[in-house]
Length: 302
Image (cartoon, rainbow, N blue to C red; front, side, top):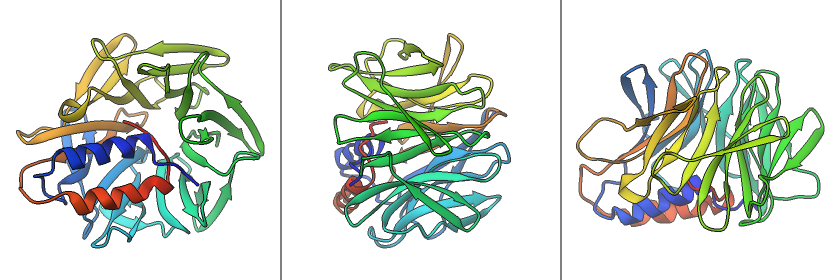
């Protein structure tokens, strides 16, 4: 069964931490240059944006009026389309330029990764494992993701029917989130004390951290080598764009924004992610409980 994603686990903490915030104040966003556009699936309680391709198509996760009515979505132009994934807590994490979508869902206690091209959905698991998430895909069709029991995850590459497992050297666990067309992989790992971003090029690993921060989470990389992710903690969580040795913060504009994370980037440099607005007071308990249900998806911390 897919364990609660660490990115979503962090979101749960933040939602419960900000117990005076409005339940429908968590949105996706698109950043193009210096322009931010909020993304919210019509009728949704909340929307999370995870991936974007070069055509500007966005994928992610949303919940409607009931926290049990949640699914992945594809946004093309101004049109949101539910992916109607099988099982429960289906989430779309990435999309390539051919329109192939990858993600995960839980069904009868088993967590599956999937590829979806048009109306055809192909489910898969890392061989011998029942806790697999497909988190990134490039234009060649190579898939990256993670598998294994919570707290002991490993990264993997999937080329056709061939799977390759990998771990950052010496890490307690490793999560692989993004891959570009040259095959460079990004993700993050836990060393027993803190979480760090990594780049994997061939068999060479490079660790990195947002300057001055203990925890860094890398989610995607484009063909120019630009990496997006998140850092900070609690109310001060922020997204970032890393280009070479230069880091730039990404924070959705607004006086009430308490949380921003950058999750996907395309080759034009357009970024998608999510932010939390605490403008209106009400309870967050139901939202927290609803998100706890994502324990069926995968444990990831943004």
